[in-house]
Image 1 (cartoon, rainbow, N blue to C red):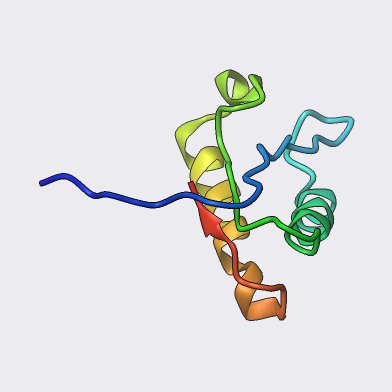
Image 2: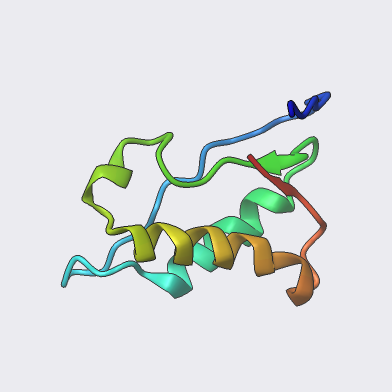
Length: 83
């Protein structure tokens, strides 16, 4: 089964923020994701792999990044689609 999507608008790749101990900076990442989602024309954000740092993440960290971005809507951020 194939899924067809009509992408439109701006779809920026989200860079992942890291702390000095090389762990994901969840607060910084959430702040950046909220900022991106609030930009005019942004209709989706791209996570996990489009800015090259994904190779340094374990699968559970990749899932955490995607889950955090998906949870934005619950925090009052305008809805954006994950790609």
